[in-house]
Image 1: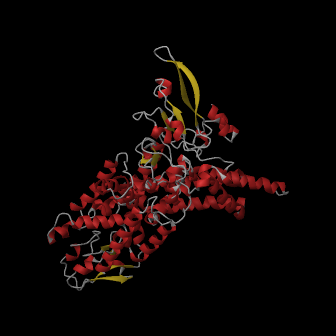
Image 2 (image 1 turned 120 degrees about the horizontal axis):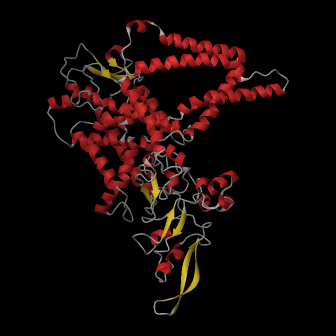
Image 3 (image 1 turned 90 degrees about the horizontal axis):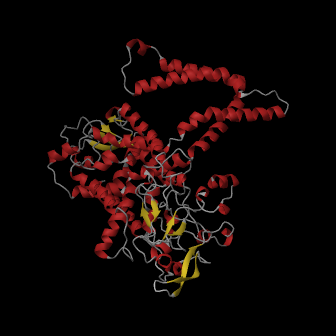
Length: 629
């Protein structure tokens, strides 16, 4: 089985690298280059939480979860390209004696860290649940009262929500408060006094809640209550999810991290040496930071084998949670076992196969079966429960604190600016991007769009879009420009952060003529640096390269007096904001290279009407008033 696994590892890594290399204008041609990203269950779960949808091919992640619930964490050691790289890098690193290898592969408490990381990231993605539940009573009451008015119009006697649930709301509130206090008390690990411990506080609280709900339902009617609860929860969720979630799993998701590192650091370095990856060299902002993180995680294998997989990987943690249900697992025969611990010598997951197997940590690598000299280990269907550690070894207090950190991180990050009122003019998203708040709910920072961009204009952001926007794609026009007839970035985005668009929609032609072209921003002039404006020097480069028709840049002839008193005729450029689409080619080609005289900002982008430059482009009159104010 170990030889079969190695074949699968080679195939998976080869397929991943093949998809990575053909993510290029020259070779793309419909290949499913985002399959590994779409197959990540963490991407599927997190984007479903933030957007309430499973986008396109993300159902592959659910397939991987299903396989995990049958066979365990086979993804981590058989198919994950980053896990395979860790395996390879560990083998070419420092050599250990058998005794050292056994000790290095014993389970350590630090390996639980990945579950706390997962808890924090899931809390950030599902924060909308808190305001949803908080506002649910109001929305349910609103829905019930609307239905009551409708019944009154039909001649029935109406009962308002307050009349039906007035008393029961106080009873339910008392029960919930008691239940919440007990949960926090026990979750933080405080010792419970003996006498208090004998009182069934949880049971009594649940009884009070059921009593209150029963009184209200009897007075309101069961069908009416069910309809109001469903409608009210839906209204509350729709009102809360748009501004109360952020997707940060891409920071440590192994597939997104690998694609990002390969795109911005590894492939440009390989091209520098071979000149065989790109037709033109690529440069990316702070690629050295991404590269050092990537190499640092690989080098860590020389000190702690599979350190990232065992201690940091949130995808591994998610699969570890689901692997507790696996039907097959490694099982030890205590009669044959001589406690030699040789099964630990090559254990990839530090899952303690020499004792009670930790199901959540086992990578199903089969190395332990290969190394056991007494055939005491087998891969069995439904072995004895007594011979396994089913759940991850977690501290409840730490788990609660990790979730609390995730809940608090979002408002601190969002209220620090950079998304709404104080958005950065440099945050110019690729054409087809959804509005910024939804963008941050969808983008996993994989940088597939950056990899496929033919002009190098897309760059990984630092903190221009706030801390939430780290490594998300932005357009830097000094590096390149948005090609007029290119929509490749929208074709490879795995989560819909950049929705798939056609050339016709991007240009605003054919069936999209009424809505006009997609604008990513607007160009402006710095007249103090523009040659015709500041130095009376002829220059029409920006007008010549402007790709729109009619051109968004036009010139006006003026006569100026030079320093010698002579008359000179110049063409001074101007921007037509209704025609400018923010492609950035004028900024890229401007001869004033250090700080171009013409520059593009995010204002005027069509993905967000609140950022419209012209009131004539704002469809909602009330929104126009807010923009004007």
